[in-house]
Image (cartoon, rainbow, N blue to C red; front, side, top):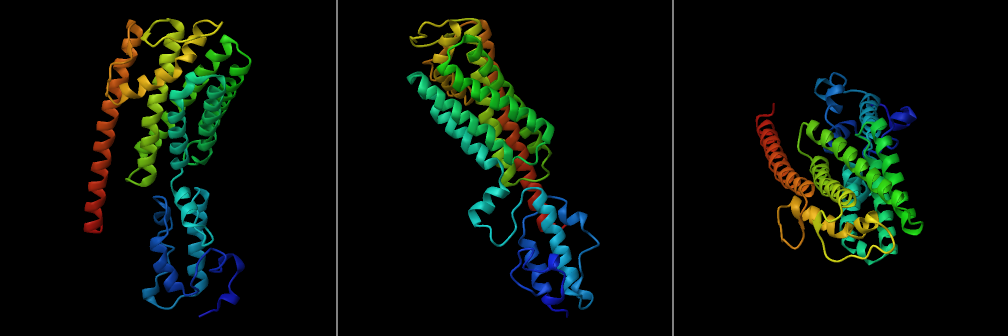
Length: 314
């Protein structure tokens, strides 16, 4: 067999992140390298068959380099220098988004504590926007539109707390609503098109569920701005502003109401009063139940199909 020193630099085992210079060992280890669906299938017919005889190591390493390159284009990290934690994050691009959404959710109830806290929530919303940069599976043109709208809404939210204008409040909430809607639609499309259950699809489905809560929270805020008194809220101080200031001051309560409605807990301490607000709450409760039921049924069916396919070897 040819030695590693005689191989092209681009196809050497060290260059593509392999520990062993033995081609047969490399092909065996390849089974444990995470690939996107279709990577190995696209290379069918070019896999070196060691059972037919001895093959040149360069052909094995060339094949492995091709697989590494295909995985790398999709954001996977396969080099040996990658730590297990970074590798897990790279294979789960929705993890950063999920953590950002949870941070935003935990901060939302404190929005009534003043402008600085609400500005901090706007910064947390900016972190949500930047966490979408890892979603390489989403179509770039739609991702750019979502990022621009989300970044604009987050910055306006921060600026509006220091330069108080009712138009800025409304514009920031409207842009964030559009951002959450577009992002949830793109992620849901990606999850539904996934042919198998993976950690990536599970985290993506969880992100969509949280985004649904934020979408209805923004709808509740806009409803309270358009028709003050739409919800049974505790006494709030809007300062010298108008209905938009009152709606923003109630944003923490309305976010709480949104997620309580989404999960159908319904404590009853906050409730919609006007017909438009009642319609929004009713649709959210229905959407939350249908989403969980349908998504759970789909994932269970895919997992059962995967297990059957794995046992039959087909």
